[in-house]
Length: 326
Image (cartoon, rainbow, N blue to C red; front, side, top):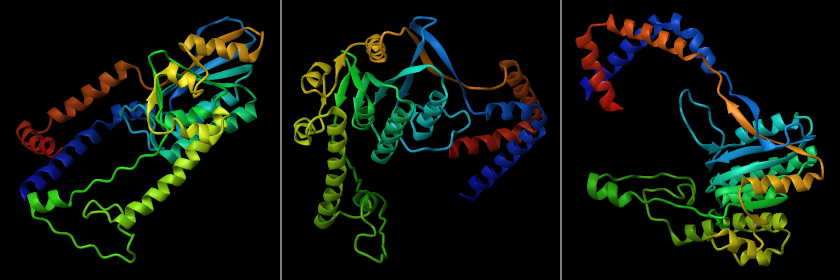
């Protein structure tokens, strides 16, 4: 274990030295990559010189809390900061007629869904423009939740929508750890609920009842949000709020949505809502700022040269340990 740790430290030191020796070539490259993505509006249809703009904003992935944008870390998520950036951009856009959110999401964090939902309502009130949600594939749970901010919800004929409900999953690992690893644990706590949800013990009936009551509160709020968005009694919402997703035609019958169609259908719906004025159809696009590929290649060549100056035998031996621990 000590040998592996020593090799890891050595490998880290070697690679750090190599990076430092090539920092002159990389300093401009790194700074360019750390710039925030730029945005632009791309024409996708409508009338080129229309008086009003109908902008499509893609929303794809799980709904998750904000986090740092990691260097070279691809992700496909819906976050408050991502939505806030789009809304800030659109807030300053002149001649904005309507916004179509192109949604594909199975849901996610309940608290984050509420934050984004309130953000969308605030934007709609301040900008005084209609919002349309187009569900291109999945609009479930938190995805359906944030869609309640819309004036109209359109779903692709082959999409699914719904899953109104709340879910919590707790994992038990005590038997696995005891039977396979012979590990025992001692928990010292100041209150009987302090280690609630611990994977190291079975949950008591009292704890299950306590958490069920909590979930009922969140579920009731979800019901009220849908009732407000769909303009129907809460009791009517409870008829389809059993966690199921529905085909668009079924959802339409239950008045969960307003129409079935494609993105063009959603854009035409937006066009009708803004009145007789012709609309430009535009898509909100994020463009990542960064250096030209030739700059990257030059930096990598410099780094390779620095690595080559190190003893190949030592680097190879260290790298094996480093990658194995990864």
